[in-house]
Length: 108
Image (cartoon, rainbow, N blue to C red):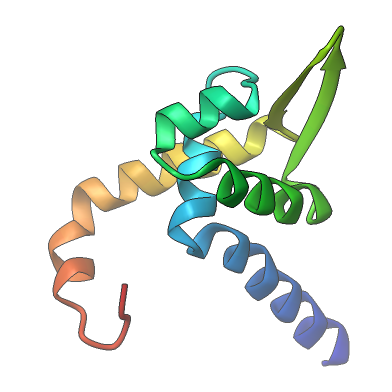
């Protein structure tokens, strides 16, 4: 029972990584290819400091990795399954978006 509870708690933490709109925007931008911070800023409309803070959080949780190429640092999803999870969320929302949007128990 304890192991099952710990697994559930871990899943809750994982989905918290996706639950913030800024972090989710960053993950969506990184779906296709690695990007530099300034490219993420441009694509998301977030401030540079906001992007940097969220990238730090996403790196700490092993959802994003960084790679130095010369003087540039590129960020990318740490695992292709993250993009698949985001794709599945899009597919699911195509069918249930109206219900999710009208849900009064979850606030955005």
